[in-house]
Image 1 (cartoon, rainbow, N blue to C red):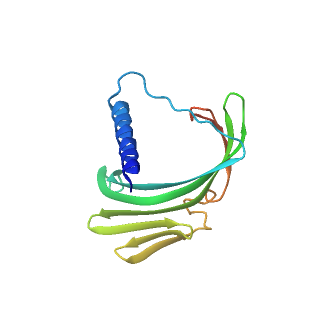
Image 2: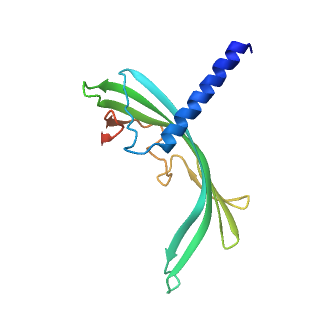
Image 3: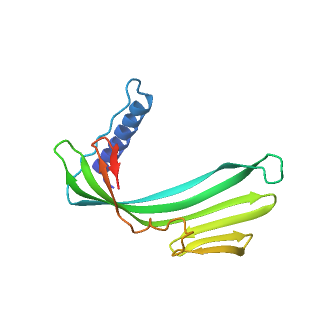
Length: 167
């Protein structure tokens, strides 16, 4: 890298850092973002999710109320596309959103039982340790993503990202 390129790269890093600091330390009204939708464009997204926490369950099946907290870990991805069909002069866009893929793995432990659920295009599988204990095929009525993957639906969104309507 020549000296000019190194100086330019350093300046870009410094400017980006200064801008980030100003935005983080800024007081006053929130920064408002605007979407400038363009007709006949397609936007593809892939969202990665990862988290850990506790799920609280309540049950009275034994005759007395019982509360159970389960540690849960989850990771997965969701892929989707947005097709911009029309944009009004006010900036309101008619979009078609299609979920093109989804995968997730959820792990938890209940009273010493290690459970894992795997969700994907082929279905939902539940494992205890490494033994498959339940399988729900993707075509089944019990499949959590039935009617979602690959099924387009319409949205109307304003220039600030507010969903005005959906089908």
